[in-house]
Image 1: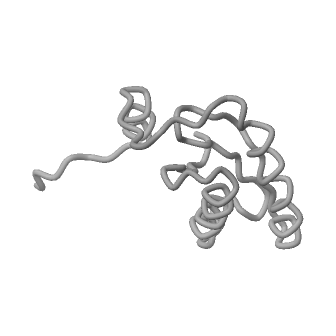
Image 2: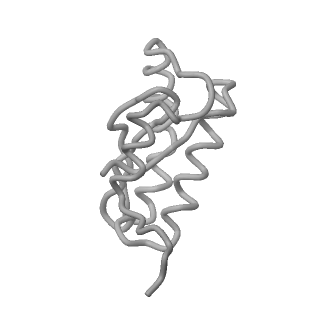
Length: 102
């Protein structure tokens, strides 16, 4: 039997709820820019049979819903990384985190 801690998806949301999201919070006024950035990326995701939409902004965490072919796709982590890179550039905030909605 292993003494390693068991990871659950709830661990991610607990960290965020406890304020452990590192970095500067993204102001609510940035929501239109976040939405626009995600909208610009949607055609590429849709071309591959998936879709992405903004769910919420909490601190410096942007939660998105992946659907269609993105669900269960091995490349979904890279998709989220690409969204993060675009948002870091658009918001000029390297602390932005992009996580899938639970």
